[in-house]
Amino acid sequence: MKFSLHAKDLSSKARAGELETAHGTIQTPIFMPVGTAGSVKAVHQRELKEDIRAQIILGNTYHLYLRPGLDILAKAGGLHRFINWDRPILTDSGGYQVYSLASTGRKINDEGVAFKSHIDGATHFFSPEKAIDIQRTIGADIIMAFDECTPYPCEYGYARKSMDLTHQWLDRCCKRFDETTGHYGFSQTLFPIVQGSTFKDLRTDSARRIADAGREGNAIGGLSVGEPAEVMYELTEVVCDILPADKPRYLMGVGTPANILECIALGVDMFDCVMPTRNARNGMLFTTEGIINIRNEKWNADFSPIDPNLPGYVSGYYTKAYLRHLVKAGEMLGAQIASIQNLSFYLWLVTTAREKIIDGSFSEWKTSILPTLMRRL
Ligand code: PRF
Image (tube, rainbow, N blue to C red; front, side, top):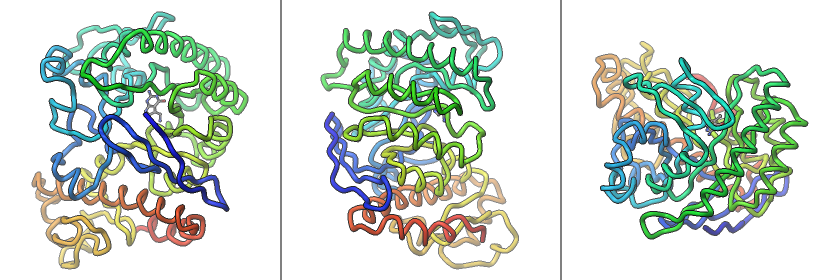
């Protein structure tokens, strides 16, 4: 993997770069649509490429390991081949999903985490070594270290203990990763994850420790878990200022359009979040003109396009009134159109941010566009 910086904003810490992987080059800052179980919900791979212009998607170790399972993924020749996606993929390690999805009957110790499958209740065990082995078999370009994501709020004592455990697990992840090779003839890279809850001193310690691991990219976890946005920005800034500038920084599970622009301004290069797809399925649309609840009565005879300013096909082709009808009627096409709209918007957002960083107008653009993007229509 190779990361190169192409431009830096003068009035913020925003950067525009390029990340080369075995499955192609990603232009940063980038948003990565979440394809949890081998599918970005309600969206075809062709739409992801051609309409949404996704450059990299995410998969989840936890889900893929439980279903379809490693046997099938190995037989398919890895996740890229299984799902027919030839662009980059990143997999999360399971360190977060084990906490958010398998919360009952979970037992954590130094060795790893025992948890019950949310599908059939069967008990499984993830260790740092196992999380690496599984991600070798899944075969994503970028794989994540096994961590513990603390909840919010979190007591200082627990946050410190948990962070230390994440650091110990990182050493084990790195060792396993460096002792093994990719299964499918291309190389993978491992990103470690900063933790430390909402405590500046812990975040500082963790960021130094993660930087010292000397991997090709670094991630920030444990944020956007319920803390106020200002707290998230403050800690993101503390961490970004410590993580090496010449490597990509990935802020996990973030966020709203405002969160993304603010964190780009702090030096974050990569984002993922279920918000565009999950909210789409509930009828909440992100558009270049503001946020729309398409279930609202006011759209019932609005025959204007969903979003006239986006380049993708669905945004200009379908009307708000038609999409409202589909969503109200529970038609599956409603979820499809809304998901494509929201992801097109998120990719437009980061692509435009990148253009503005390069042409030197990012900060002014951010300030002028945010009220429009976040207003409720
Ligand atoms: N750790 C991992 N994945 C994550 C997170 C984390 O802390 C978050 C927190 N926002 C989202 N996804 N492994």
